[in-house]
Amino acid sequence: MEFLDQIPFSLAIIACLTLGLAPFTPEPHIWEKLKMLAGGTLTRPVDMFDLALHAAPWLLLAAKLARLAVVR
Image 1 (tube, one colour):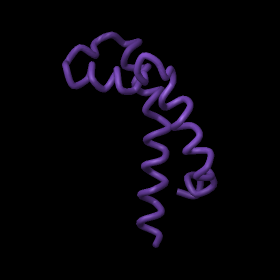
Image 2 (image 1 turned 90 degrees about the vertical axis):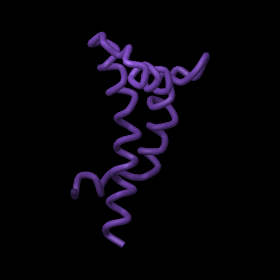
Image 3 (image 1 turned 60 degrees about the horizontal axis):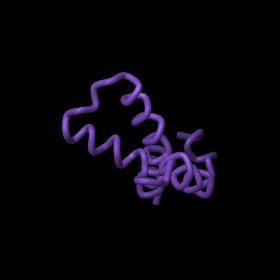
Image 4 (image 1 turned 90 degrees about the horizontal axis):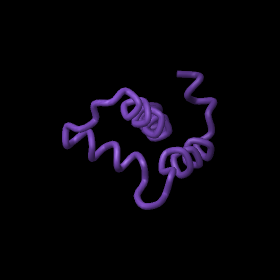
């Protein structure tokens, strides 16, 4: 948990807004992969890796927010 505390919120937010949403047009990649997951078409390993890559910053931010809620 100390490692998570050392990462600044600003870095997590910037990562979400850049890597988490890139490419921005025609729609964010994370949104496309989540729709594929919900539709059952996320079957190729490259698509699964892509989802993990674009979801990582969002998971980091969620973990930091959860940690903040628990500490306070």
